[in-house]
Image 1: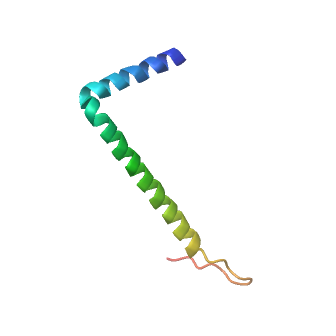
Image 2: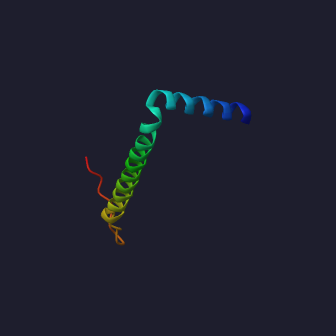
Image 3: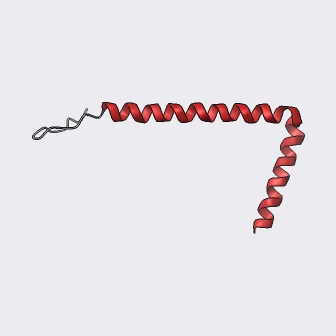
Length: 67
């Protein structure tokens, strides 16, 4: 099973090398890494914003449901 997976990865790497060339692959990988870093930072900021907006209810209060 593992032997087939390794062969598949080699074939995929060879196809990418042929399609994009050795010069463009590092630039593409760098751009992908930067994009993923930005996405991670933005999703973390969204989670932090949601946590800041959540106001705990005091005793006796009920949550209002928007309609």
